[in-house]
Amino acid sequence: MSDGTIETVDLTYWYSGNDWASLDDVSIKIRKGVKTVILGANGAGKSTLFYHFNGVFKPSAGSVSFNGEVISYRRKALRALRSKVSVVLQNPDDQIFGQTVEEDVAYGPTNLGLDDDEIESRVSRALRLVGLDDLRDRNTLKLSYGQRKRLALAGALAMEPEVLIMDEPTAGLDPQMALELMELAEQLHHSGTTVVISTHDVDLAYAWADEIHVLRRGELIYSGRSEEFYSDPIRVYTTGVMQPSMFLINKSLCDMRGQPEAPYPRTETQLISKMASGPKGRFLIMPVSDRLDKYMVDAAVDEVGGDLAIGLYGAVTRSMLFDSMLPVNYVFDGFESCMSECLMGRDSLLLCDADCVDLILAKMERLKDFGTVVEFKVLDDPHSGSA
Ligand SMILES: Nc1ncnc2c1ncn2[C@@H]1O[C@H](COP(=O)(O)OP(=O)(O)OP(=O)(O)O)[C@@H](O)[C@H]1O
Ligand SMILES: [Mg+2]
Image 1 (cartoon, rainbow, N blue to C red):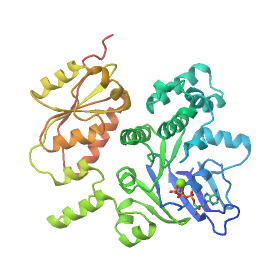
Image 2: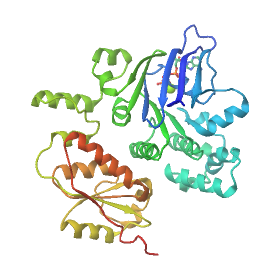
Image 3: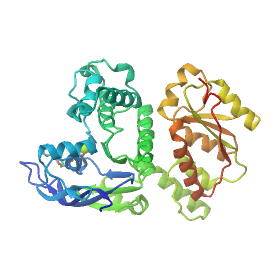
Image 4: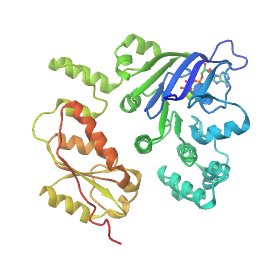
């Protein structure tokens, strides 16, 4: 058994006509269940590498394997591979074939031979997750660039792959969709999908990745945890990227206070947790079943006996906000913002998708590394169980 979901050994690739290798002896191991970022400047070889992960490109030399077996390039084997490894390409136009949004998302599940009900349920779910459900019948030629990016992602999600690989997923998305996409990536990871992202956005990479693999002009120059890589400013500079702002802020604050840099905060909440002293607020979590309304907030206000900050987590809960007219403080990034409020002394309520409670608890558990224990409670949705 191999713990490497995808592994390349001495992978080398020459585009025909080039007198240089776009990938040069790259040996990389993408480990199952590890949030992975492939980092590199423009032209480093990220997209070329991804084309190898689902067998679109065949190595000029070396090999690519999936779950311990070297990839076969026969048509049937490739179809089986692509049902497990979905790559969302950098340019959505390279993978949109359907005439309408719905047809395009249904294309993959139909090829898997699934029955009509299953195809319909996967298409609806995928479109809802990327916020395109109201454009089901739209001609794909009439979508904006960001909408086409979302559509390409929906097509991959509908395959329900073991490994989801996204090439520059946030480039070209509006800030809200970029945040939603990273939230979705976190949920997919939590539910067992191995998620791999390529980017040159170091802030995104730093906040999200458990492990980074860094490419420079076709060569793999680093694999491991982020901090060791970013601690060497010359290496970061010659790779064509920057040190993440959270890494630098932590360094400056720790220098100023004479504190050790470790543990390294990756998010604003972790940083506040490390730095803040003083009384903390209570953190209330309420899974949302099928509606969002003031009775839920009233239940939380009764619990703390006064004012609280309200945030949302998850696409399903967020989709109910408009009709609910709730006075929500944090529509996006609700966990981070509500927790920051708690760390600064204010009680908070996080209304979240019903299947995200475990994930929220895991995020809270990680905060303990930064010295903070916040009192929390999971409240029942007053509507749960009601018709
Ligand atoms: N179709 C092609 N034909 C010839 N050379 C190519 C082709 N596509 C990419 N290359 C070359 O291969 C190298 C790696 O390109 P690749 O697109 O994989 O980089 P990347 O890391 O994805 O960059 P970006 O951040 O700009 O997307 C570059 O030197 C590029 O010029
Ligand atoms: Mg690329």
